[in-house]
Image (cartoon, rainbow, N blue to C red; front, side):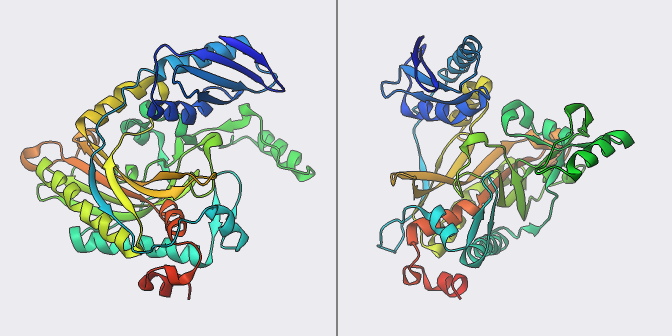
Length: 403
């Protein structure tokens, strides 16, 4: 470890093995969860060293040890799996991609960014978001006879535990709390805020968490409702879900939100049925992308698991090809082209059937799969690829969102 002196604290850690840009990208993204005193960890171009940017006031000995533990588990990830493309669309619009979409949407008054991973939107942005959601639902009904559903934005911690979320993505969970049911504690909180200039939070000992969380995956609230049911014939469900994933300092406009909307499709049945729906979902995604006229690919992918379980879980996902990601080209803040993950198509095996007690043929635990479309990312990708000239948008879309 070599330490350097700047206005901030920066030190270099030698990696235990060389990593490629795929693993380096995961390290840089997930480094915001290593310590509140670490701003970011960057992997050098050679893939053999990592630069740790620590905030002033940090205990450097402790920070170095924690960063080293994080890096040692992250570099164990196996990368380089063959990326298979299962579906692809090419846009008809020949105009250039538009840079700085988030800023332009704010400038036009179509979006308000609260700065903490939440946005409000109206006008063409709202109309496009509604159109994408409605069109996806229409396609799901036509292709799969999907049943419309609705689920709450809050979810019980026991349900998340059954879904395995605490084991895989503990960093993304948001727990809900309230002031304890105590007269004096509530009055103390009220009085503190009655004359303060800004909000004052109650002390930790006055916050009660009753086991409720904000839902981090649109499909999860569906599974408890299936308990005791038989899905020998197979069934699909679809809805618009409100999703919350804590992203720390990774939040960035519509690119990466804390709170967002997902048009969800869940399919339940035996293995043959579930796999057939995943295959049939590919042309449905293509139809949606073609309707909006955007470049799009569906390809093999893995989830961003928490560091200590990332290597094993990513390897299993990649080797079993249980996750396909819907990638739509967009532009980074520097104008570089990037593939934005705008949704995914997933197979779960009989995991949820076992955990929540619903069956298929012969009383065996049913298998499940899902398709999730991140509405706000589809909106960002569409404005990136068509810009703000109405004539560049397909007629069926512009006649709705710009009227």
